[in-house]
Structure formats: C-alpha cells, structure tokens
Length: 508
Figure 1 (cartoon, rainbow, N blue to C red):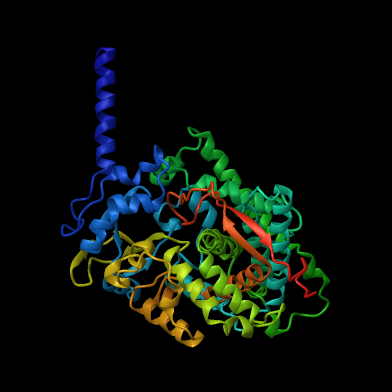
Figure 2 (figure 1 turned 45 degrees about the horizontal axis):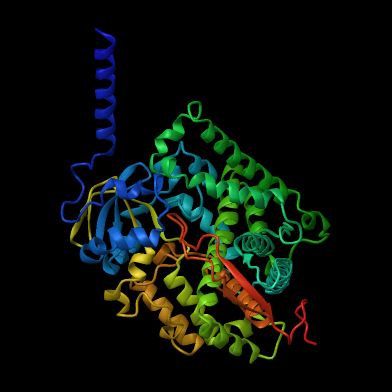
C-alpha cells in the first residue's frame, strides 16, 4: 500500500468516526427540529453573545415547537422551553433523573471540579446530601450582619476605585463583585472570612477566574471526550491540576479556619451554619471525605457564582435605567435606617420586585442539561424521549417568550410583579410552579439557597443605592457571555458618592 493510499484510508476512517460521533441518533424524537451543530460550535470562531445566538437561530424553533434537539457536551440532547413540557420534566424526577457531569462525562475536567453533589445527584445519594445540607441552606434566621458588613466594604472599595479613576474614568465592576460574592458566601455558609475583599489577590479567589476561563473553552466544552487525552493536550493536564489545587486549598482553608479553633464552646443549634452540619456528618460517618469535598466545592461555586453574575447584570440594567434606580433609592431612603435587618429588607416591595425582574430577564444559570431519561417516556404526552437521552432547559427562552409573559416579555418592568411583598413572592411561586419562571429551577429540585440569595441581593442593593448613584460608561457596549452563565462581559460604570452618607455607612 502506497503512502498516499494509507493516508487516504486513515483520513476516511477519521471522517467516518467523526460523522458517527456527531450524527443525530435515529431514535431521537422526530416531531421537533434539530439545531445545526455549527450553532453549538459557534464559540470556536465567534464572540457572539448568547442573546444574539438565541435570537438569530433558536428563538423561532423553540417558540414554535417548545423543544429542539441540540448538541451539547459531546452528545445530542433535548432542550425544552415550553412551560407545560418543563413542568412535566421537573415534576417527574423518577423518569427524568438528575445526572450531572459526574454521570454524563465522568472523565472530564468539569466533572473533576464538581464531583457527585447535592445538585446533580439522584436517588439515595441526593436524599443523603439533602438530609445533611438542607437545614443549613434553608435557614430562616440567617444572620444578616455579616452581609451588611461585607456590603459596606464592597461599596467603599467601589468608591475608592472611582476616586483613583478620576471623574472621567470608570470602574470595571466584575473583579470587585467576585471578591464580594466569595466573601459573603464564606461568612454565611462556611464560617470563614476568606478576606477576599480586604486583600486582593487571595489565591482562592484568583483560582475562580482561572476556573471559569478553563471550563468554558468552546472546543473542550463541546467535545469533552478530548479531556480523556491530557497527554496530548497540555492545557487540559493543567486544567486538571487547577481543579485539584482549588479542591485542596478550599478543604484546607475550611478545615483550619481560625473560628473553628477559637470557639471554646460548641456552636448553638440556632447558630449552626451549613459547614457545621457537613462536618458533623463527616465525623459521624454519614458521608465520606470524597462526598464532603464535592459538596463543599459545589456550595462554594454556586453560592457565589449566581450572585456574582446577577450583580453584573444589575449594574448594567440599573446603570442604564436611572428611573428604576431612583425609584429604588427613594424606597430605601424612606426606611430611614442604615442598618437594615432581614425584616426591613423583606418589607420593601420595589426592592423585591426589582430582584425578581433581574432574575427573569438575566437568569444567571441560563441553560442546564443535567437530566437523563431512565426509561422511554412521552414528555408532555407529545414528545417521545428515548431511554438514556439527556434533557434540559433554557431559562431566558421561557422567560422572554411573549406567549408566556405577554408583549412586554423582553422589557425590564419590575412593576409586573405587584406592589406588596407577599403578593410579589406569591406570584414568583405561582409562575415557578407553572414552569414560566425557572431562575431557581422548580418542584422537588428547586434551589435550596433561594432564600439566602434573595437576602444577599437585597442587602447589597440596599447599601448600593443608599450610598451611590451610578451610570454605565458611555463607551461600554453590552456584550453578554457566549454560553454557560449569563451576564454582561466587562461592564464598566461611573459611580457618584451621595452626599448625605459617609463611607462607613453611618449617618452624619
């Protein structure tokens, strides 16, 4: 066989193997369209934001059919956006079971990051993790004082950066937001002050920026099989090392946190945080160290990431819409307090409605495909889902659909939620149950940290509008992330300190 013939045979074999890898399985549902695979791969050559991608290629088929076949994480999946189909999927955990990266692509970098955890597990494992962690994540008596203290430091640092930039300069908000979100999460869940706000460059915080750049690389995100070959791709070998460094550092910091050794008496049950409950479960043998580490990591990641991205969106939205910002400021100043309690925060209707609307228009977790059909089933009675098929949802799709939210679906209108706190939260629950509002997922697998996330957003937004007025830098042009998390990229704002308050949050 000549060299040319040999090369041709190898090339043909590779083409056939690739075709077999990316072709749509014959048993996938026939009554919904397929999104061309190049749409999923567009991040390889384009910097288009996910809003641009969705409006150009996905909105029409999803709003017409309610579901599509789409390439994601190395396989063809069913992506669902019609509320009745979403409700059927989320209600029937025994059919459409949670199965995250640890099941779907266990060899991958992202699987080494998150492991088997409370969000992506199913069955007995999920019940075990929930029994240990739910009381700490759904506390009704979160101490809001650490959130207030960190919010004050955060606003002070924003103003300091604005002073350094000068009157004509602007501040890049994401780096400080990330430091704040990690600091607040550590205080509220892990009983530790990571000191990220006070000391820039802390390794645990720096690693988060590296991790986000690493796991969302389009080539490996869409073809995770390549993670099997770190010897061929040195960048993936380094990626595995980064994930391990983060895990070990977080475990060590929490294990050796100063407060753990300075407390002479056991923590009172009413004062227990999530980490106390997890450590007790580990000591009693309810969970092993691998399970402890995985759930410690997912707590760290999700409890800061979602707030971080929502705050990025908030700076953009309220920075370009001064009417909303001014109305919110009037409500906050009307409380005549600089030390808001949880009760004060929860009594403010416009603050509550602004956050609900931010979650509707800018859901931080925009898309999640982490359920697998345990048996062949008919989704909503109309779409046949073969056993072993992964299914998921896209939050911006359902939450910006005019068929669901009316002709103003794509507009930011906090007033749509109501004008009384109880009314607003009741509407949020109703829309969630109906599958219209899935910012916190829904039904048995809804986010256990929802209450904390709302409290944290209320506190930091209260402190911001009380002390600062801001606008988006005129030279900044909105560009949303291309996939994964949803938020504006590199948003810059101009901040103005309000004259009637001092930097430390005390009245004159």
